[in-house]
Each structure stands twice: as C-alpha cells, then as structure tokens.
Image 1 (cartoon, rainbow, N blue to C red):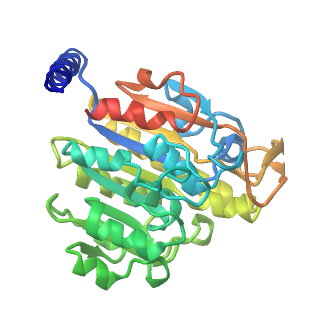
Image 2: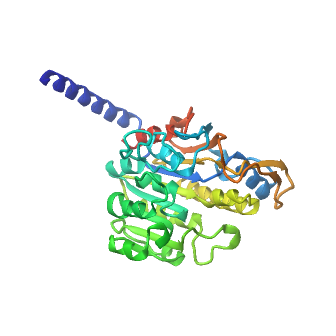
Image 3: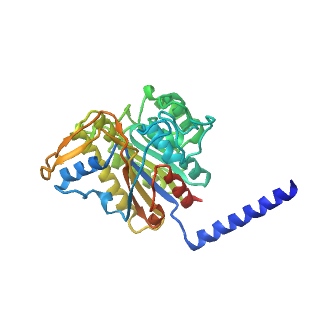
Amino acid sequence: MIARKSEFGFILLLLILSLAACRMEDPSPVSIIFCIGDGMGDEQIKAASLYLTGEEGNLSFHNFPVQGKVSTYSADSSITDSAASATAMATGQKVNNGVISQAFPGDGGNLPTILEAAQNAGLSTGLVTTAALTHATPAAFAAHTPNRNNYGEIGRNYLETTRPSVMLGGGGSAYGLEPESVRDAGYTLLPDKESLNVAYPLYTPLAGLFAEGHLPYEYDGAGESPHLSDMTMFALNYLDQDTDGFFLMVEGARIDHACHDNDLTRSVYETLEFHRTVNAIIDWADGREDVLVIVTADHETGGLSVLENRAEGILPAVSWSTDYHTGVAVSYFVWGEQAGRFTGLEDNTDYRDRMLSLIW
C-alpha cells in the first residue's frame, strides 16, 4: 500500500510539473466569456441576420475563426430542455431533463461545474441573463438540485454556497431571490439600470434584480430594465479588476421564450440584442490575449424554418413546426487566442473540459 501511494504521488508530481511547463510555453487565456442564446438555432440566427442586413451570415459572431455544430440530447431524451443542456455544458455530464447539475441518472451527487472550477482556481465569476437569475441555464452553472423549478433552493445555493461575484438579471419572490435575502447574504443590491453607471470595487459582491421575474422583451421596450449588452459590459468591467481572470456566463434567455410562442418578431429582436452584446464583448476584448469568447445555444426552440428573404428591415417568411424544443444540432462560434483548442467539438458535453484546460 505504501509503495502504491508513493508511486501515485510521484506520477501526480510529474503531471503537475508537466502541466506547469506547458502553461509556461503556451500561456492560456484565464478569462472566459461563455455566451448562450437560449433556443437560438441556426434558423433563428438566419432570420435575425436577414432582418438586420438583408443577407445571411452578418451577425457579430459569424466572423469568429472557429465554428462548428454540437449535439444537444439529454440523458433521457433526444430533445433536451435548458436544465439538462446547460448542465452538460457546465459539467461535461449528461443528465435527465429538468435536472440541475446533479448525477441523475446516477447517485444524485453534485456535479462540479466550470464556474465552481474557476472559483477554485482563484478566478472571479459572474452570471448575466435576461431571465430570472434562478432559471435553468444560469442555475446549472452555480447550483445543484434535482428539479429546475426548485427556485428557492437554487437561490440559496447562489447566496450561501457558490456566491458568484456578480449576478445580473431578474428575480423576485416567485423565483427564490428577493432583495432582502440578497442584502442579508452580503450582496450589494443593484435595483435599476442607473446603478450600472457606478464603479464598484471587486471585493463587493453584486446582485442586480432588474425585474420581478424575467426582463422585458426588447421589442416591448426595456423601460427601467437594462439591456443584455448593458449588463454584460458592466459585468466585464467589474470582473476585469481581478488580475487572476474570471469566468462569465451570459444568457440571451428570451429568444427561447419568444420561440415557444412562435413569435418571430420578438425572437428576432432578442437575437439582435444578443448579437449586439457579443459585438460589444469583442470590442471590449480587442487586442487582448487573455480572453476567450464562446457563443452557442443550448438547443433550438420552435422548429423554425426560414422560407423567404424579404429584404433588410422586413421579417422573412417562416414556418414553425412546434411550440417546444427540437433535437437539431446547434452552432458554436469561438474567438480568442486559444480558440483553436475548440475545433472538433461534437457534443455539448465537450465544452467543460476545453474550458477547464484554459483555467488550470
């Protein structure tokens, strides 16, 4: 037994030294911005580009150097939900629909997420979404529960356990995040978009609850709520104070909501705000060698098909096949000094290990 332990220790030491040598020879970005267009399949992207420019392929992430497609099925269905898909991306493990980063199927144990790995590596972390913060996609990165509707449990996970440095989105009592509980947990509450004009020191954990529930659709006007791009730029400038780097998850959540309603107008407007957000990220990161940006979707929603281009500024003719998700593969787009590491992705479970290799 002693010899086995000694042998293991020697091998572990060699591995650590090898990884350290590789890191010195090939420095990796330590700040990762993971952007998820919820429900944003290829046809949603096409429709938005046609409306914006009259041509396909003209959104901000279309020029990213690494692109491909990944499968999205869950452990118990060929058609995933957001909980299972986000869990796959965050943990590298397939789970049943409705599960948030726990081993179902399996022993039900917590599955470590990329956000938690980033924290363990000394990085700051953040969640930005146009949905309620405890909704399935952000939850899979910073919480653990067998049911995505356990909003109170998810909120407690955030405030008591994972404690991301910054959280921006919607909230309210129905979604397990109330202003009083946020303040009691030691977070500074950001109540409206004007609060994003203040510079806060990194040691002050921040939580923005900008709506009771989800943020308004872009088409309906933001009102007192910030845009996705506003929240994202604030989070980037806040997290960038950490010289060790950061991990930030950014979700354009309401693309999915519009597509569940087969609402092309709101889907296009939400996708275009997601496009503007990614464009703002690239402008912010331009010239830096320590930032990696990943753009993808958790699944497609609505079975959208674009039938006819009707020119710039006019919605294309489309058809819908369902009011739920579909099992089609979704696209990914990667930009940054280490983007080449992401070639050859095949499934949504592949993201975590590729990101992990850039953190450790």
